[in-house]
Image 1 (tube, rainbow, N blue to C red):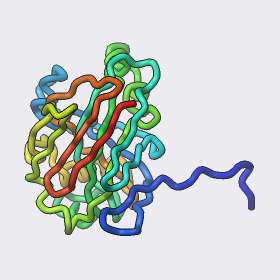
Image 2: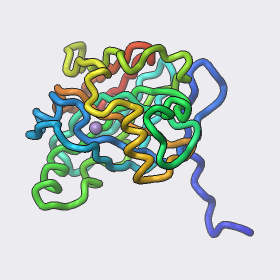
Image 3: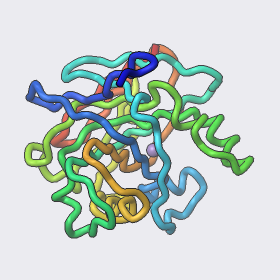
Length: 231
Ligand code: MN
């Protein structure tokens, strides 16, 4: 058997404090999962969780201690940051109950669900899919994955994003509308989860535009920091 061209390399994310890497399968994202963010987007937050996806090769993988460089994407004039806690699935399954969800989690990472907000807004207005706003190349900067046992109590961790040293987003993971375990229950009823899946769990309020030259510094207590420069 031979391929008609060289297949692309497996996308992978470093594991913090290790030489091993986490091979990525799919990227799921939860929409409007913090009440105050739902409100700033014009919704009440009282709705079941909903999901969208990004391709695995949309990750901008940033090694421990490095500052990632994200090129300002094409077409948009309104690139927004969405700081998120990312859940890394280590054991797959379908119809996983929230009570069993922890046993399916390998670890956690910091991620940015970067969004071409103008294109997403137009897609919403027209009733069209969100891919142009959400799933573009390098739309998902991500830092190393911290194994769950080393990550502390992520469900009650502070989450924040500074831009050029100014606080833009500041909340706590406990304010998720659908917590990590409930998110896994809902998601695994819709898709069979597999080892290597990543779940961007949603962003708190304070999303806003960034421009070339901006330095983004995200943090979740117990999971570390993430630095990205827009170039
Ligand atoms: Mn998001």
